[in-house]
Length: 276
Image 1 (spheres, one colour):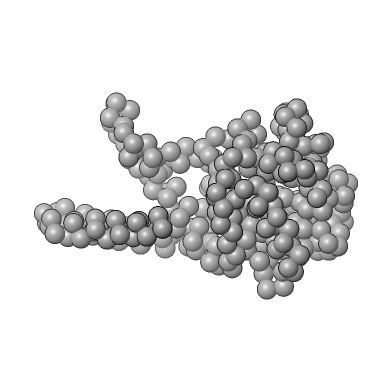
Image 2 (cartoon, one colour; image 1 turned 90 degrees about the horizontal axis):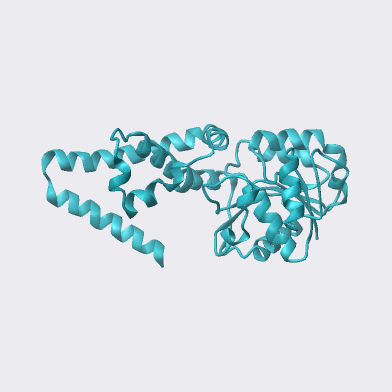
């Protein structure tokens, strides 16, 4: 398959790396000339371009590894280059705010969004590594009119990149679940780190703090956009979290050992079910 990846950052670069290994003809578009050169030198792409070009017309699949608003801008500027039987997809962490608009802008091509549940705290193509996808969840968010051919293409990409479970959900379901499992956890990590007023915390850090706060090292441009694009959902999850934290806080104020133990047993049982 001939694939064009727009945005050669960590995720776009990792996609290019893995898909090239599987024999796909991969091309890249990025404003950063250094990123293009890095990708070429490493063999991630056959050729790269620092602006939209006619290479778009030649590709079977276009993967947009850029921010939500940049996706709409790219589609608007390049409508004349899209063609029948071409699949356009994105790797964005929110869906409801733009996918339907993107679907209209992408015609004549078929637009089908997905979300790779993988990444790391490092930024840039120099940290690209297709191993981050091994066994990770791969979520596809079709619309009612999405053809099976597009679904098959994304499933092939997921398999070629060694993803684990492939899940198909609606746009609404995706944003609800990602608001909880990804955005809320990032909000908690950021708030925990920012609540630290001690000068020598690093001397007392163990696995608990380290594991909880790794994702506090965050791309401020991307994540501020993701939070705002999904803010109503995220606010509800934050309120639910605050409610649970208040129950624990009340148990501490009242010295209620039984309630604390009840909360710990409940969380242990829920977490154990996730291991199965």
